[in-house]
Length: 341
Ligand code: SF4
Image 1 (cartoon, rainbow, N blue to C red):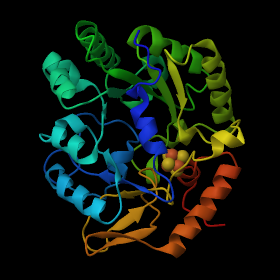
Image 2 (cartoon, helix red, strand yellow; image 1 turned 120 degrees about the vertical axis):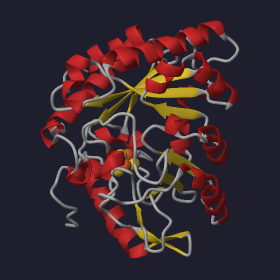
Image 3 (cartoon, rainbow, N blue to C red; image 1 turned 180 degrees about the vertical axis):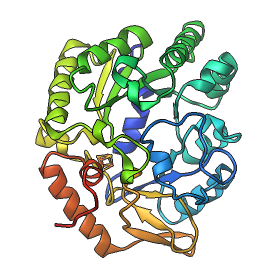
């Protein structure tokens, strides 16, 4: 297994950590094909589709390089690409260059169908880390994720590519979605990612139905279940040498059981990170891709303009949610509406 200490395997984490209140990042939501939201899978409760109203146009991938230039001119240098399946975009290499990204989030389907050819292109484009969402069927049955055998095959193809290209290997990470059905299986799923995928890292995140759309609210874990997930993650971290198999706890799992040192910078939403899905005049700027229903600013003359009052309201709410142990997006999406009280 690849030794990951001091290399860029955790590039995605490092990039997020570089966003702060003095240097806020921007998450771009866009469509990889045409101008409407599309994907090659339809997972239950997908945050991507929940961001769009029926018939709403999306930013086309072809517009991203120019938009990235414009944002850099107005002071936003830390840019994130958020879409359904990045590799569906014909210009995905150009998008990585425009945003300086060295990692790719993918559902794995295109790695399975195109194999070495796409991995060669990724290596040539400077990709250092590939992140794929796990489907461990016993635990993810209701989510309609990419089938278990497809995800396993994608990891197998990357591992075999790494073995035959020792000077040009990819770090790998699996994202594991925690639900009300699998909250007690963290260790089992961590072992699976380590043994079957042979990934370098695992990241646990919470299932949430964004803005009440297209998902199964009953699968959102309770606060008690999130606390149990956090306890098991701590156990899993003791089990492995983290330089070889990194165990990451996503911000969406909340703050229960975290030390105050770890709490620092856990949630960049709003003050250190903003999300944009349109540059049309008046289009909303929101605090996080999981909170499309909260506006903290708008687009004016092609620029991101933050409304200090609305941002203040959100950050007050964020402080209270984090104090209560919850990720702000999880708190908002587990209630029927955004309640500022
Ligand atoms: S609101 Fe939650 S999901 Fe969004 S950045 Fe904060 S911790 Fe992460």
